[in-house]
Image 1: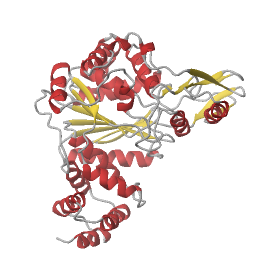
Image 2: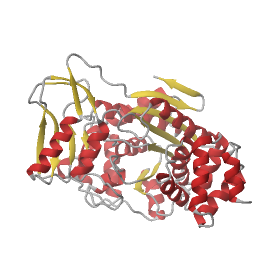
Image 3: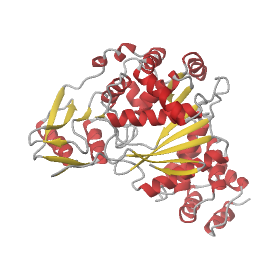
Image 4: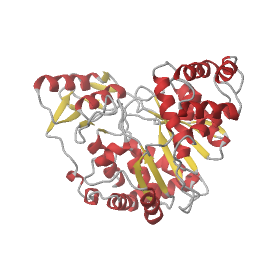
Amino acid sequence: MRTVDIIQKKRDAQPLTTEEIDFIIEGYTSGAIPDYQLSAWAMAVYFNGMTAKETADLTMAMARSGDQADLSSIPGIKVDKHSTGGVGDTTTLILAPLVAAAGVPVAKMSGRGLGHTGGTIDKLESIEGFQVELTKQQFLRQVQEIGVAVIGQSGNMTPADKKLYGLRDVTATVESIPLIASSIMSKKLASGADAIVLDVKTGNGAFMKSLDDSIKLAQAMVEIGEQVGRETIAVITNMEEPLGEAIGNALEVREAIETLQGKGPADLTELCLVLGAHMVQLGGKAASYEQARAIVSELLHDGSALAKLKQLIGAQGGDAGITEHPELLATAAYQVPVLAEEEGTVSQIDAEALGVTAMLLGAGRATKDDPIDLAVGIVLRKKVGDTAQAGETIAELHMNNNEPMFTEDITQRTRSAFTFVQGEVAKPTLIYAIVTKQGITKL
């Protein structure tokens, strides 16, 4: 088998066999196939696409390229959740304990933030003492004992994906649905999930900017799940404005605690109930979505999910007292209000711009090696559809640097992310569609 023949075959829009895809991925991971040949192959895929079977074969080849978690010792159906990334996306901190409280085991491996999107592991590290690294035995034992664990991803998980993604990033082949879908799903499959719920973000603050592209990506990932025997559901959700009100690590942990206390923002609470219900249904704890929704709603409001978060934090060495006293979390030295310059109704909030602003404050990373400040960030005081008077606070900056020019720049960036109009503005749609193996249900 020759690499050049496989490149030519895909260049001519012919489907590749399982063996050919395995050959490409194994050869590239080992170094036997050079970057320039994989670049040509990736560009051929970019222009000609892949069939559902090809995409599933590529996904499995990348999943097998490194470590794979074996969760078979954990009883029950293990359901994982993946978000395609956004601003203020705090769902894992709420969903993991919520779904575990319903009796569905959650063995979660999460990543760090990069650019304008936050990372679950960074957020958890804002809890004093919380250990994001556990041995394989500790990880499995903890899920067996309390039903939930959240750790950082293994360094040798899906090395083929890491290598291929780096190549795509410099060869203008990132925006390929089969390559994006296989990248995401390979990590989920290597993590050992039996079933997967996908939160596919769409809009200004998301990786996929258009609804049509987000639905195509969701369909591709659901098809991969079907091909490899993992039931998969995708929920297409709005990222035109930040989710919830907090942007920043400790600030988002505080917001997660408030949500589990039944006092969280309406959009964040609703999304967690929707995603949680799908996870509980896939986990076999409810016969229908409606029944699962009733279960997670009760667990959110009766304190069971908050108690499970406390148990999770304590099990991984963190200060579980923050669930009763979130003020113990890291706090920035300065809180600076951002004031509206005119009266009006918020018609738009540029989520990506606020994510970048939070990164400039120190809450995120421009490169993967950048240090982050766990205390800083932005809290929104107005969302789309809310009215504001001139001089009223629309956002609050949490800062550890109060140098005047820096403060003025960050304040102006934040204010510029808000667009005001006169008159009423409808609250934005939160969930656009549900994608399953049966098809697309638009809401």
